[in-house]
Length: 324
Image (cartoon, rainbow, N blue to C red; front, side, top):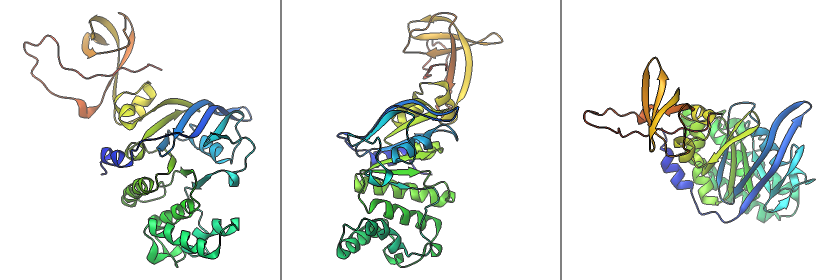
């Protein structure tokens, strides 16, 4: 397995300004609400992930950033420029699709060159130079004359990445880019994505339902549920300090024990969990009163056995988030 902390350290960098601003954005399809009043900012150079189950609105928001969908309400800015009325091909973005979308009759080099040739603003020598650099960047130099059908799934995904970055977009959008790959190749491509993002210093926004993938690759994660934004934070904060019960249950394996505050002394609380049983929990904030309904969230790997004889206050590490 990949050490997520190592990859996060590799991809982290100091960010300077906002690459994408999503301001009060909502999207409805008929009577169905897909995205509900979303506000978030993605900084330049970030690897930012939209995470959530199927149907939560993450892909719809990505498509609105790309220009394939139009917000019902709100606005989206890229590099400080309002994108209202700006078609996809005029936005400083490129997109890597789940199914790669490579032209089967073109070689890898021809696939990568396609976007540059369609713009008709580059000379043949400049196109060749850019294509060669992009293909080398994803380590496909020896395979550039092959057709997509002659490549493995991981190699096809690399080719799709080369085609996306050859135009040097401000933002690269990735829609479930690794979901079609086998587990082993998927882990290899996670490392490849992290390496590529670090090398380019480009803003990546990735949609995924795979929490391990998001935790391993992202500088920050936005967790979605039913069109709503539940929490935006770094992987460590998302994992260790979820703000809602949904995030706590969705990220990692979590034991949830519901109970009621019986008494407290400073930040040490006695929590009744039924059948005459009580647990003690250290709650730093907010201050909770007797009778308050709470949910204790316990990660299995955080459980420690200790000899409590003669101790009045056990050393506990329990976080209680919002109950919604």
